[in-house]
Image (cartoon, rainbow over all chains, first blue to last red; front, side, top):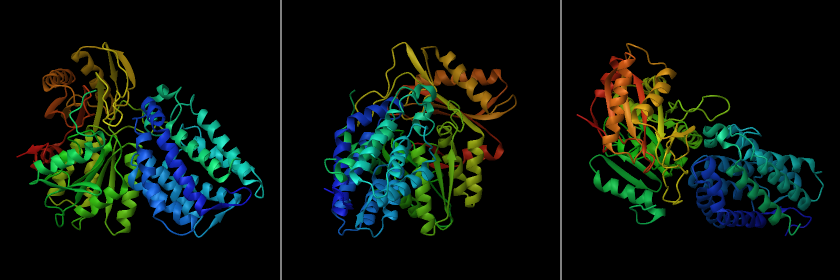
Length: 215
Length: 332
């Protein structure tokens, strides 16, 4: 585990494996959330995509974190489908571009990678905070990271970022969806937690667990 | 829910294998990634027409692959958009040097994946234009939604654009025609029952025996309004009023009327719907010049229907009447 030092390629592989396991574990919950306000396939699609991502990451040699993240992005783009495929795919592809050639990421490196990913995802999906999408978990998480000093404790910053994502995820419940399939329901989308925000929150919670040790 | 399948995870592949075995004269299927391609593709000098979307809407889109309609279709998992690599593969397979038109239904997933695919295809030197269909009047087109859904007009656009491409019209013209059809078309649907995806095994929503959903999409999502069950005459008046007043279609207009079943409603009921629609439009001085009645854009076994109108002119009527030879739609 990282302790006070940076995130290594080995830990990035662990993160992807742990996220795949978390998605598999929460598959039914994601399907249930998506059935309420979407079409009920989010858990199934993410599970299929993350299995492919794990295969890709295990077949990618070397310590280039950028290469690993791009491999994850390509796997998701070509196997998830729906809106989540291009959105999560773009997130990872842009994180990969931002960390190309890096064998270790410190807090500033992780923050700038996630920043590029979220920027790319927003450019593709055109969602803003408050639209009841994955952006509602990701943007608060990013802001929490930015709020941490560059030389701050990585584990602590990751934990605060995961907590912010969780808070953002819960805050989607009273919102009326303005993007994606849930927006067709209009006011009937109120009172349900967004499935995309839920899978995004899981991603950051698993990052905090994997990169932050027991933090 | 009982289903006539072997394995929930193999539904899409096994259905494709069945289609391929049944329709070798019209199409061929590749499996990695899934693409259904017209048997004689690429046709040199002809604009290729590609569409795609989640499975579960059969016969759309794969059933419309063949001469005079689609050159290729990309089937996703059930109710899940296909992926950019499928669309890229399809685009390359049908490019006969005159470029390729992507007909995309307005769903966030379909639009995003087709956008990525168009970027990739252009990078490989294929000329691509995309037209997004969005004819569903149940959804408000505003900054605060993903916009109107693409539904019934997509089937009609595929037929009319397919005919124009077959005649050798250039890409820009076929794309413009597609925008015209979409612009002059409007739809609305309703459901008597939800549907059950093979993956989840659960109904897509709960609906009482005495209730119906008005303003549904085609992915088992609930509608805009839940109302007490009513007669066919009342339902048609409800749907057709919303459709007619949206464009609006006016006295003296000639239209193509498309009464579509959602998958679980028998033809006998669809003809009652057509009867009511015919009367309704006559009452408003609108003439049905062409019609299509049947299950063409479905939501698995959902019971219900949708109504689509297209305002016709001589050219659109001529292209609608042009020959097509596909598994699901044949015009001689």
